[in-house]
Image 1: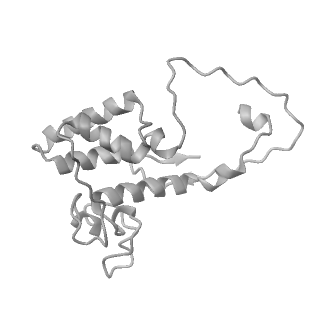
Image 2: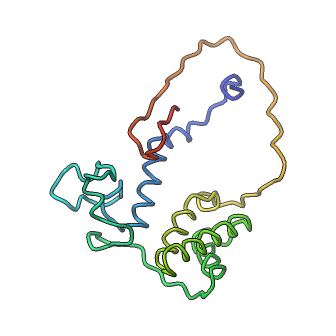
Image 3: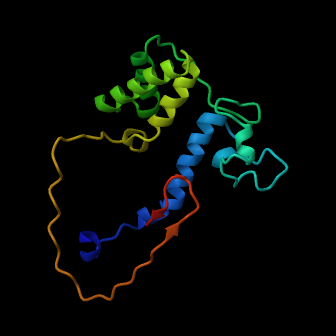
Length: 189
């Protein structure tokens, strides 16, 4: 593509491979849903005697199905917070302040509020379940992963001008991830 042809590189981005990215999100979601343990790719130590417990996927016959979301009995620790807000708007506002220092865009706040309200009605007015769903979505926002302001524009980016190709030999490494992670996808990087 354009960047490869221009011979630009960013060595710091090499530490965030697709495998590391999927592992980060799996671990964060597991921490939110089940606390600090190894279920669903969590960051904690294995809680069962079975050494395969950490690597098992949440299939019908795996140990992971023994721990449902919000069950912290097998966890070494878990995230705990009680919101002082009474409405979904207040709760999302608190979450935005805590996790993004107030940088969460209005569009993402509205999306999180909708998710909270939908989860609240889907789970029989359980604020705990709605909180879990909203927190999982919050960690996917750009504002959570950056320390600067994310500015959304209603226009396409200006295409980068093509650079003149240098006469360097070209090599490519194609990695095919079939381990799951986002289990419904097979990723080609």
